Amino acid sequence: MNKEILETPIADGEWECDECSHIIPGRASKPPKGPCPDCGEPADNSFTFFAYDAGWDGGDSEDSEE
Ligand SMILES: [Zn+2]
Image (cartoon, rainbow, N blue to C red):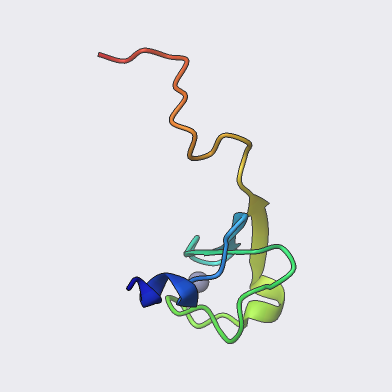
């Protein structure tokens, strides 16, 4: 079946590297471990969490762009 899905944690936001803006999807309670994979900055103090807005993946677009 779809075993690969079990390995993926549910992300309610994303961690952004303050140095290079590298994005790591994850949860507020679980900051990224280890250094930034892009620039090598320690994750301890170089990542800022941004929670996904409600309806992040709702696909409910109010603005109709053609
Ligand atoms: Zn980085």
